[in-house]
Image (tube, rainbow, N blue to C red; front, side, top):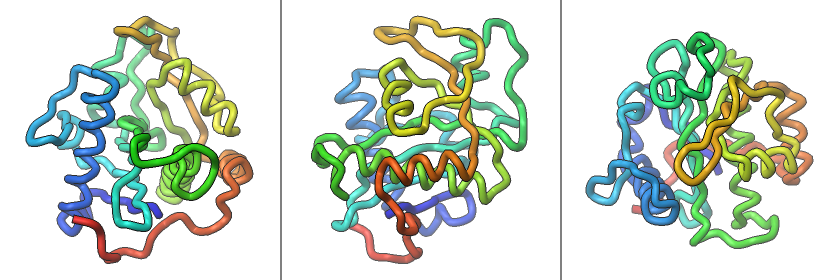
Length: 212
């Protein structure tokens, strides 16, 4: 089930956001070894203070098992302010109809393999469907994300491959980074649903009890 937490309802979901930031710390700091800021077991950065929308997947036990951050590109965002080298000198991306997707992760320690509801594949697709459906409803036409070749292949296998790239791939740490473009279209959402078998409404009615 997907929760959308943004500046309008964040005050209602403090515990949910804390659990999301804890998942990000476990994934990005503990498992992947990224140089990120972790305080009190939670990973946050400056872009979390800019009123992004968070797409949060919660399992049947109320535990956060996946998330993604969506931020408008009209203001500061990671591609322009952190990863500008990927653009090869092209002008910064600024559009009210293009959002940046960052901090995508799933709880691989809690989730299993295969395609069942509590699987990595299912939650990955659920978060993607939630993000694209939410963005499309908000008038967003495209999304940009900095990804690595592994994620690029995963997205292509699920029918969610980028339609293009900005600039050129660049080595960053131990991986190669690409600035990928994806349309928020009905066709893309349908491909994701076809791949995953998710046909129901992924969004959870609000105010359902969550795990502490």
